Every structure is written in C-alpha cells, then in structure tokens.
Amino acid sequence: MTDETPIGAATRVRVARPSRDLAAAERFYVTGLGLDVLWRTTEHVPGRHDLLMVGPRDGAWHFELTRDPERPLDPRPTVDDLFVVYLGRPVDEAVIERLIAAGGRRVPAHNPYWDEHGVTIADPDGYRLVLCSRTWP
Picture (cartoon, rainbow, N blue to C red):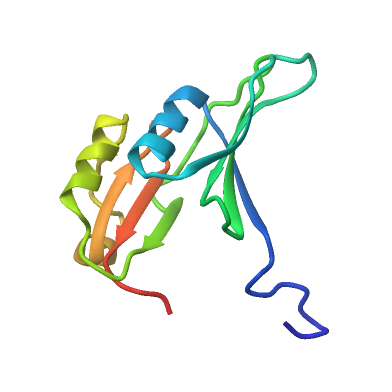
C-alpha cells in the first residue's frame, strides 16, 4: 500500500447485492459453496433491510445479500456479473452437484474463457459464480 492508494491486500471488502430470497441465497452460498454465515438479520424492522453476510470466517471479504421487505428490488444481473473463485485445481464435480442441489443452475459462460478454465453456476437470483481451475495472479 502506498500513500496515494489507501487499498492494500489486507483491506476489508464487502460486495452487496439485492436478493429475492435470503434463505435461497444462504442455501446456495453456505450449503452449496461452503461459505460461513457471518451475520444475519431478518427481524423485519420498519425502514431497515433484512440482510445476510456470507464469506470465509477470517477472510478480508464477504458478500452482503440484502432484501428490503417494504420495497423489494428485483435483482437484474447480466451475463457478465461474475463472482470468480480461483481454485488452482480442477473443479470438483461434487461441488457442482452440491451447488445445483442448493438452488443453482449450470449455465454457459458469456465469455468462453470461463468455460475453458472452469464452470459457471447461476445463483438463485441469477448472478453467476465461476469456479475457475486457474490461479490468480
């Protein structure tokens, strides 16, 4: 990290997305992918969002999936809204089967690179998870 850039390798990152169904999202990302529930609130407090935070327990990043029960948003993912996980090894078929059983569906990638080097699974809201057999960087 330099004085000009306040972001470094240990900087905490949160990616937030709307979800139609937080229970379905939890099944996909926790039961299917194996992430941990870091925080959950579904108390339906007026003026507040319900949310689910998932990620690795000691990771520097997590997903925040939100739902406003008073004004729900319909997620509008595109074919290029990707969450890419670099595994550094071939994708285990058991993980693919678990993700599908947890509400995902295998889809062809918009960019053929991802089909060549991994597997793309749409989550219950239509966002795409790519399990990539390559490493990064």
